Length: 264
Image (cartoon, rainbow, N blue to C red; front, side, top):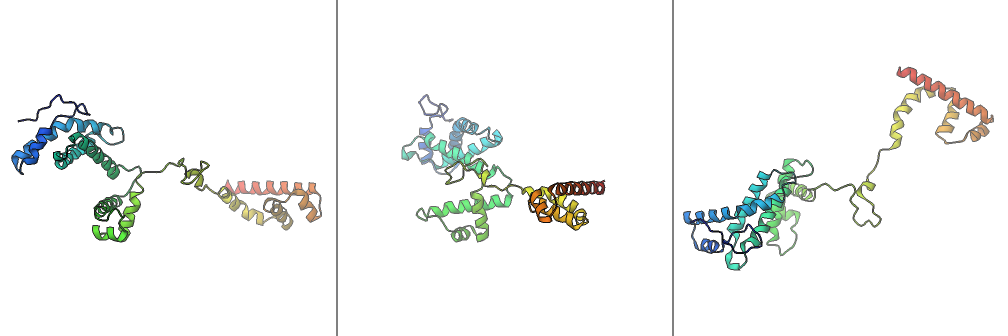
């Protein structure tokens, strides 16, 4: 007989009253009768599982896939629920279904492209860590323990552990840990060296500068590489500042014209 939905109030409007069905399910041995009752309970709770899946439909995953994941979480909740504990099924089913959906996002929806092998290593490390945590009195398992439990190399365990911490991309505007002045991750990144923009220009004029008379080369070197003023150059060479200015202008014009001709 199909499970009947009563008018009994529940925290969720679409939560059916299956308390009696669960009590009967707990007494039935494995077999067709138990499987039929189990399927009826799952079917009765599917509308709520669909609604829970709908909460995540705007996060980049298809709604049909989310419904399947939610249904899988519902089946797990039905199989693991113990009515003898006295808690309503929905109080156990909701976090179980929601957890299954979130686990799906962690395992399949990455904000960055990650090789499939790394995703597999991550999942194996996570499952092994969960198994070991149940028998390790709350202590975090070591790399060697995870490797032995999951039949992996320690190098692969380290890759999996790193992937566990790298599921999402960190915003460049995120404030650095320990920063008290709003210093962000973007502030810590390097930037292109402005000198790179002059590499091509320097290479273009290098041979033409080498062909200049020695005094003109010295003047240009002192002015543009030694950052000396025209007055200091004039004082060092024993000539007037005006003459230095004319020499610099003439040399720059000559070199520029020659470089443009080479490019043409």
